[in-house]
Image (tube, rainbow, N blue to C red; front, side):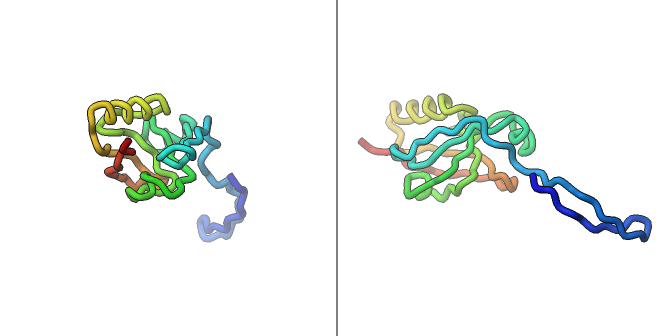
Length: 130
């Protein structure tokens, strides 16, 4: 995080302190799915980022372009925690949940998660039809 100078009052006395702003750590791994119907990238988050959100697992959606995800209302930064009630923490989990839905003939999935701001989201997303 960036270092900033902050002026505070303590016991009526003005003080200036240097403070390091907290922020999200760098993602551990990024998976580009821009050439798929999802047209987005996914990032595995560092454990401290998950902890900041009160999560044990999840995968962040970033770089959403025109796609099924954007059409559902999902915005960049959304951390997916469940797909159709199945916990997800890796791209393998995401792929398994989506493959299961396609195999069972479902036309869509419910994607649950949280934004870095703490706002929870629930989105119905259509599956690509072949």
